[in-house]
Image (cartoon, rainbow, N blue to C red):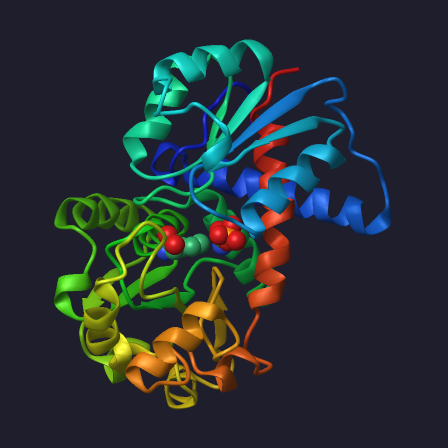
Length: 329
Ligand code: CP
Ligand code: NVA
């Protein structure tokens, strides 16, 4: 399998075999890390990490993974670069492409990371856009595979705003890899029809299915993986909180939902999560709307079924696999 020089912008661009190859590589790199076997095959190379939105996991994963591979990193935070303000994406891409061997971008529209990739001349990796979060998908698939020993036939239900990066990406990842995908949300939060149609074709090829339902009991029944995400994503205005809390509260992941899912079901979340009042925003919304938890109850988040920290760790191993596979020699 040769992915050298490829961009990593969305899983739509990758075949199931290529995705499986990246998962296998991540598993191998994880094992080597645990055994202390060095993998610094890219000594002397450098990568640029552009973050127009904040991050804990993705930034740390790219930095540690790059360092483990022997590379240097430069972190460009929203306020410290010229991007978009004094310099166009195309110009930025051509400058960074002369200095770095690879570029990560986290930000707003997918068209921005696509433009960056068009002009950079080196691999560009999508660290999250409004539309997609492909590196998160590899971590999620690896976590599910580690837990169940397979991907095919697993039923994953996504609860919440299924029209945004996480819902879209999970639907793509599941349909490509043979997992049955269920979006469980009010109809206005269903993924867009064009993407659903495209994923139905992937599902047909992989022998899986896509279900969109408003019915919590039906949607979660017998699920192997119950997945949720924050109700308001980065970059969205504060004004949407009230509507989201009203619309999505029936889709909060609770103990009852986990029981309905099945005795072996696991809980996943890309994180960060509002499962208590220990964050500034969680506390503010708690006081404004009289709630103590949002997309998932603290009970489920802290339960043995919750694999969110295995999932978070896997961000690093899978991001390392993406860089290792796509960087040139
Ligand atoms: N899941 C995820 O992308 O986390 P960060 O926003 O902390 O990078
Ligand atoms: N939907 C979330 C995902 C965070 C990893 C956001 O875009 O903020």
